Image 1 (cartoon, rainbow, N blue to C red):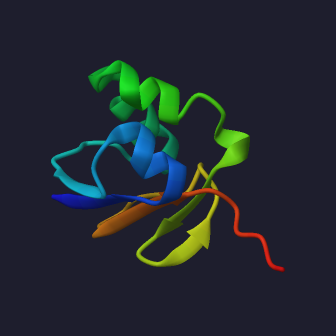
Image 2: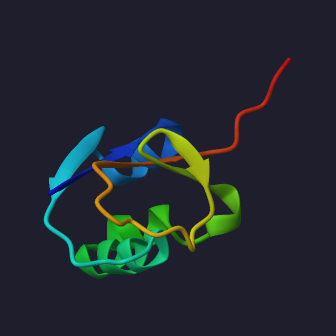
Length: 82
């Protein structure tokens, strides 16, 4: 079981702040593809991965990162300072 968190506009498009999922995905990208198969709202949220950042167990990573035993994956837009 893995906790998938959504922040900012990703949360708005998917409609929930987080969900608990059973997954066999080995990488973040496989998880994204699995989510996109669920419903159209996921396809919309993950349509442009260049507009997203991802963290696995609270460490920023790339979409090819392995999920080996991960407890949490978070998706969010890039942060801007100002």
